[in-house]
Amino acid sequence: MSKGNRKHSSKIVDGLEQAPSRAMLRAVGFENEDFNKPQVGVASTWSMVTPCNMHINKLADSAVKGINDAGSKAVLFNTITVSDGISMGTQGMRYSLVSREVIADSIETVVAGQGFDGLVTIGGCDKNMPACLMAMARLNRPSVFVYGGSIKPGKGRTDVISVFEAVGKHSEGEISDIELLEIESSAIPGPGSCGGMYTANTMASAVEAMGMSLPNSSAQEAISKVKLQDSMDAGKAVSKLINLDLKPRDIMTKEAFENAISMVIALGGSTNAVLHLIAIAHEAKVNLSLEDFERLGKRTPVLADLKPSGNYLMSELIEIGGIVPLMRMMLEKELLHGDQITVTGKTLEENLSDTKNYPKDQEIVKEFDDPIKKDSHLRILYGNLAPEGAVAKISGKEGLKFEGKARVFDSEETAMQGIMNDKIDEGDVLVIRYEGPKGGPGMREMLGPTSAIMGKGLGDKVAFLTDGRFSGGTHGFVVGHISPEAYEGGPLAFIRNGDLISIDADSNQINVSISDKEMKKRRDSWEKPKSNEEIGVLGKYRSLVTSASNGAVTTKN
Image (cartoon, rainbow, N blue to C red; front, top):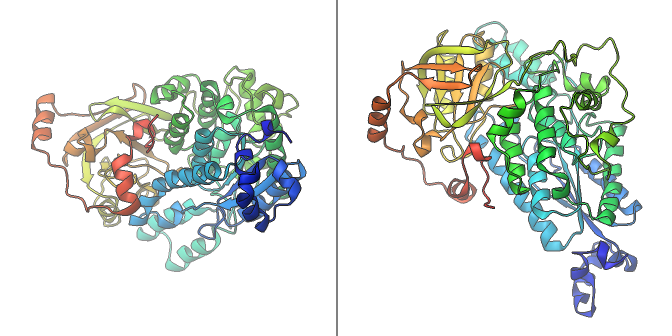
């Protein structure tokens, strides 16, 4: 093939002076003819760290075959992943969001360093998925994302969230030690991402709506023939993209991000999508902000009755056709930009032209005249507690307003102790602070405390505020990403036990009932808490990371 198809690899392997490079590549399997082919990196997030990614080596092999069959030369490499579900509630969780940046950096490093002309990335867990897209956007070389796929349900339609909530039920005496062990032992039966519309499935759906994965990629079970085929097809698609010189930033336009946001809302997706989509847009040099979520949320209903707030699992949505019929429904209502180009080389509308409707008897995806919620469940709140914004997940089942007295904790651990020791009363507003991007550092997810609250039967009786994050599996009256964060002297730092806090998801306000004079008095007397001098990756992260309202990124445009 011509150098036009080898914009980057030709600099690595062409010419007499590059004989040492070719010698090294021959040792890893290159033949003479391979030096004239575009090189495509396959970034695999395989590991035995988590069930989300334990099967991805097989998907990577399938992608390699697809690339090679299409006339390019695949080069497989690995990057890391960490498991939110395993580290949740511990200090290890501080590394979760940090890993997003590490993974993006590592993919960029290998692809740019080795001169790959194209890229396939395969992600299967909450942070490695947006990391893959961030790297693609930075590199801006023809690329396709492959989702690792969703897990099969556990016994009795259980999943990892069932285990977290079982802990709260156990502390209330509702279930025995043996019953807890039974749930623990059967809830996660094998490979794949957590089975509700949690962060992984949310982001997979957003990426498909954005146009960066093949149609149906987001709605396939991890262990399935169709997922292996999806991986192979992605490999073949990259060669086409290289020939077309169609790059990620050609696809990741502002309109493409609007498609992603609208899909997240329609599915009732995770609050983490706000953070991740803003971060990906930052790398793609697209101006995306909290205001875009607010604007699109006013016109986009929640249509899918999916866990955690709803009743159904991703596997059940897959059975009725995945998200493609929903995308067609939304396109017909002009809620998606159909003229956006995708990794197929076709527009979104063209991809959807032959889409079949959902079965008439299905109950998972509602019609527009009978939505789960007429507008977004993701509420962007402002007020004297969140001058730069906060992200709430309000399904409507919890009500749209909450007012109560603050019960303040300076860490997730102390809050969890308070919950388990029955220190939280009906009507309280539980505040967990100093858990933001810099304060943690790392912006931990609060799945342990929120699940314990649910397990104790307080899910609709208390509200929950933090400058940290929430898991995609979290449900209840929760508000996170409060900015500026407490560690940076945001108003959350000045809240005291007993302060009256009001949350209004109609007017999108979050306020504490203290005067400006009192707020200034508390600010003037506040001292930043002493924190251990972080070394290594956490220290780097704290020194570089931006506010959650800006995606908590570590790069500058």
